[in-house]
Amino acid sequence: MKDLLYQLPASTPFVALVFALAIAPAFAVRKFLKNPIHKAKDNKALLKELLEGFELEIPSELEESEFKGVKSLKGQ
Image 1 (cartoon, rainbow, N blue to C red):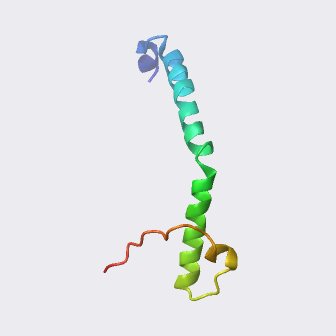
Image 2: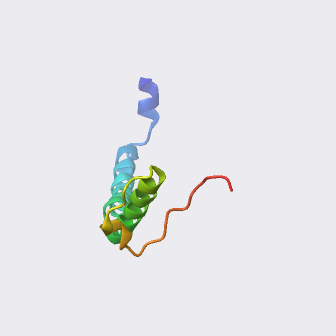
């Protein structure tokens, strides 16, 4: 094991650090800067579909929305 560590180039930790610093912002942007309005509409559509599926009362806030339902995977 010690022989393997000595055979690696000295720049390996630096290359790994640069790679990590280059990739990390891409994940952060993807996770935190998504369009919150689009996500909220998807969540409302899913909630409305679940309430309808359990035959529960649907609040007026969900009735007034201008969104389309979530696509279902049910067999036709």
